[in-house]
Structure formats: C-alpha cells, structure tokens
Image (cartoon, rainbow, N blue to C red; front, side, top):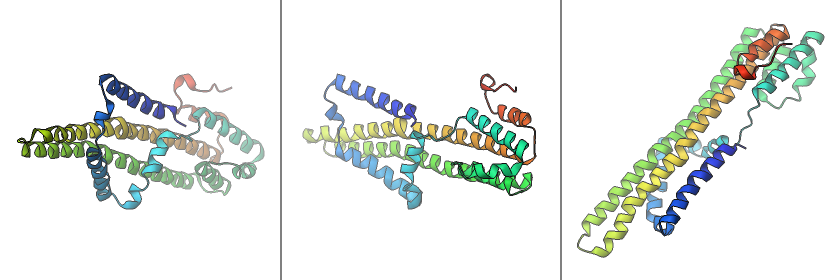
Length: 253
C-alpha cells in the first residue's frame, strides 16, 4: 500500500474542508446540478474518447497508484547473486527447481528461457518486447487519467456558462440569481478540485510507478542475460549495481 497517495488525498481534501468549515457553512458548496454537470459530463466525454473496455479499467489504473508490488532493487541484486552463484557452482539447470517458486512472471519467464538454452540475444529480444508492452499498457492508463484531468475543468467552465446564462435570463427575478450563480461558480470549483487534487496527481504517480517498474524489469533482464552468458557473479553484481544510486550500491566482496 502506497501511503503517500492516500496521505496526500487526506491532507489536501482535509485542509480544504477545514477551510470551508472555518469560512462558514460547508454545505453551501454542495450543489447536485453542479455535480451532475461535472461528473456526468466528464464521464460522458471520456466514454466518447475511449472504448468502453478501456474506461472500465479506470479502477485498476487508480488502484495501481495506491498499491505497489514492485520489489526493492537491493533485493533484486541479492536474488541474482544467489542465482548466479548457484548456476556457476552447479550448472544452469540447478535453477530449474527455483523457477517454480518465483511469483514474478517476468523474472520466471526470463530464467525459464535461460534454462531452456535460448541464445542471450533471443532472450533479450523477448524480455525487451515484454517491457515495451508493459510501457504501452501504462501509457494507456496515463492517457486515461490525463483525459479525465482535461475534461473535468472544461465541464466546470461549461457549468459556469450555463449558470451565467440562466442568471442573465432571469435578472428581473432576484430570487433566481443566487441559485444560478451557485451553479456558475461551484461547477468551476468542482472541476478544478477533480483535476488538480485527484486526476493530475494520479497521473504523476502512475508515471512514477511505471518508471520504477520498468527499471526493476531492466535490472532483472540484465541479471538474466548475465547468467545466460555465464558471466562471473561479481560482474553481474557490478552491472546491477549501476542501476542503484551511488550511496545504495552494494560493495563487491
């Protein structure tokens, strides 16, 4: 669970709610027509933009920003040092019993290809293709959230125009000016909140998650290729260390 995402949401919405309460009655900012304009319009525009199947994945995309299953890079290095030393002492086939217990499908595939005797170039091609496909799926999620971030403030502005038109048409009846102005202003408020406190931050987090996941996959590919080439475990460790920040790199003993 990524506490930063959840904590960020709680802090941002909590402080805004505190400001609304301190400034008076927060229920003044609750307006059902405005919600329908922003939420309904944003959803409708997104459905027009993307196929239904893509839009239905929004829950999975958002969950990915809150739940991280990416292994730590230092654990990847320890893992491959064990694999490399075992393969060097007992032969590459000694890794076959280990493969069955690996949960990561990408790593499991790479090691299985190595045990099966594929050439390093073929293994690299397959693993790079897998990385490219992962990046493509991540990009779809980023684009989906970016579309929501673009449409929500635009629908807020449309709601503002609607409210102003209603107000101008009924200037002779003062009792209608207040409700019309509420729609005009609150829809802009809703659109700005959704875009800047929800969708855009989630876009940034998803991009960060994607970079982290691709980095780990590249480390795993480098380790698999090193084992498939029969490289010295020290050399493999040095290569994997290059993916680490200098202060976190393991010392080659």
